[in-house]
Image (tube, rainbow, N blue to C red; front, top):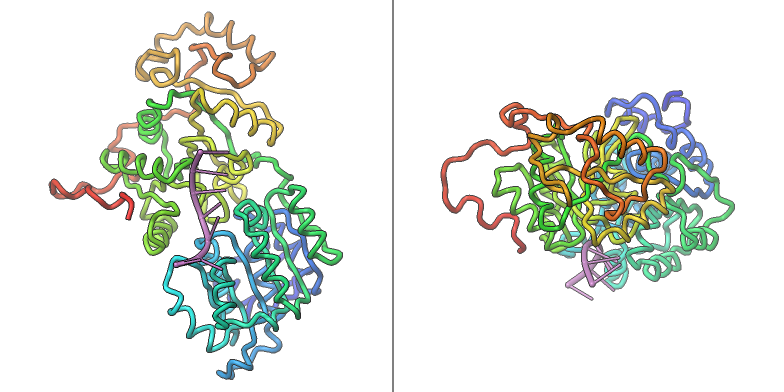
Length: 457
DNA sequence: AAAAAAT
């Protein structure tokens, strides 16, 4: 199967080829013909499956025959609208539209909050065929009459589950009510709650169903490791894990913005190449941090759940949950940042005693029993230093207890834990000098150098 | 109870 057989416009195919893509991913192969045919679509897919291109490519193709180069706004009616939950995702989808539409005389634009609205107005006035937006700022533009939605034919609701979680339902309904010329609606969601089904039932017309990931299930490519850890030891354990695993790049998820700042500050102080991203940071800083992380220049991204969904980062090998998320769905999304497109990934979660309830919810959602693996020296009841661990353990004595556990896996609670589970299988003890990637280059001794950059604005 | 998103 190649892109050429899918019926995409030659200009689009050219851009796809220039990006180095030859073969569509499963969701692209399934979705593109449906979108081209004009049918509504319900897509069950996480980001990283090639979902964005699965709708961007056929939408550009559908708009292409009518494309013209006139500068008159009347001749550039807005025809495709893509709504996303987060600003970063909007920007990312926009980049994709720009890239794949570069050989077409179509205009794309993106609007989201957190940046000056005045800068967004001239391009809108000049006319764009494709607009990517977050709901709040789009409605702001609608009120200011800087955008007219009446000619929109194609609507995409990207990460619809997230938009509902974030309380966008009324905004979305309001926006849809303004799309009086809507002919085709595409709805993508990673999970399928009753609310999503209701939304789909209300706004989709006999949709084609395209599914690439199992519903509410975690990717088998992701190895899930959980370490019990007292809250106050978590930061030390995190540093230990980063030092002893060859992580390459990693996102460290936190539950709160303050927590993310704190962790980032600590890691930075220890010389780690890291930055925090969360909703309290300036939009410009958020975009900058994301850009550096995607380039590979930044190695450790300390994030809240703003980064849990939608961000498409190539081949991210590791994800760490410094804290478990408040909602079990977010756990699925977080660990979905790794193990992408066939590659193996590892998701490590640090679980303190207060998080057992959250853990139970996660296990219920993913229908999978998760084992807690203590890390000696960091987990409750384990006191030996990590270095001393392997030699000192008595395999036979430990084995008895461990084998019993394997036959009837203990529920993953602290109460069930014994301080005796064998060493981490993946632990790679390497001299720090051999894994410099995670560290910043040594800088000139400037006493003030580390102050300020991650702290809140 | 937290995060995200319009100001």
